[in-house]
Image (cartoon, rainbow, N blue to C red; front, side):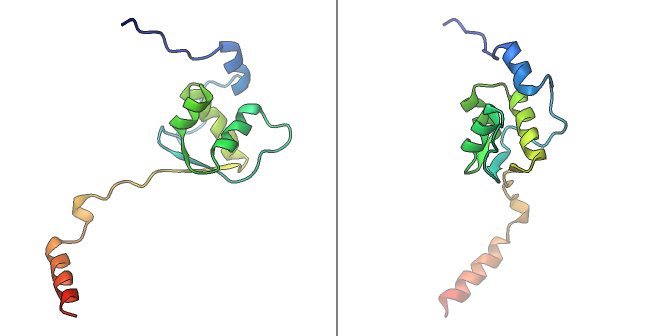
Length: 119
């Protein structure tokens, strides 16, 4: 099976979409950062920004946005930075799984269960 090269989009279009920027200003957005729309699109907004706001009515991961828009992650991060700066979106990091050490002691849980059964 022959592998096809990854299509990163027309360079002229990507340049236009990002306003010539090649990276976002900060590391706010990783692949699993959840994006949530905070307000509706404004008249005259760039089409990609409008599509992102439409997608993010419910929390949506950065990687899902990139896949839906068929744009490279770096371009999506730039677009998301624009929206974050204008207050149109919020970015949420997914909750990390709790470590086993931070969970309650199993003996304590057994005692609580035993006490509840005796009620």
